[in-house]
Length: 177
Image (cartoon, rainbow, N blue to C red; front, side, top):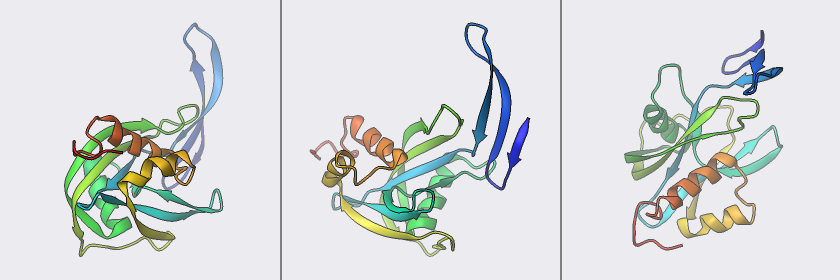
């Protein structure tokens, strides 16, 4: 049974058949899929956003991100969101898989990307309802920022880990952290 339908979010109550045969009632949130992008500069730094999030009444550091439009491919969303949130375009995107945000109550996936070959975009049009500051951060600082809690956003932590875990340390073998 649908409980709520909004512009980007649907909430439903449904009967779920668990493995083993048990039947339970659950509420499921469908926000749609999204992307997160780590824009990496040639000087071994990257851009993160310092963004105000009303749900927690705080500014947090996070990767540029946004929701996919119906029928939009993750890469197309990544290109669009990078421009919308940073004013930058990229020549190269590397896919880093996806994460489930909170699978206990939502089916949301966030597709992860690294972006290289950055340059200013003439298509920059920041959303009016976002409070965002684009911050340049050395790549070498990212693990420490995760460990000490300065980066607490789950999608950004997942993206940083995926970029590091591929054994290439942000796609360049010579980079060491």
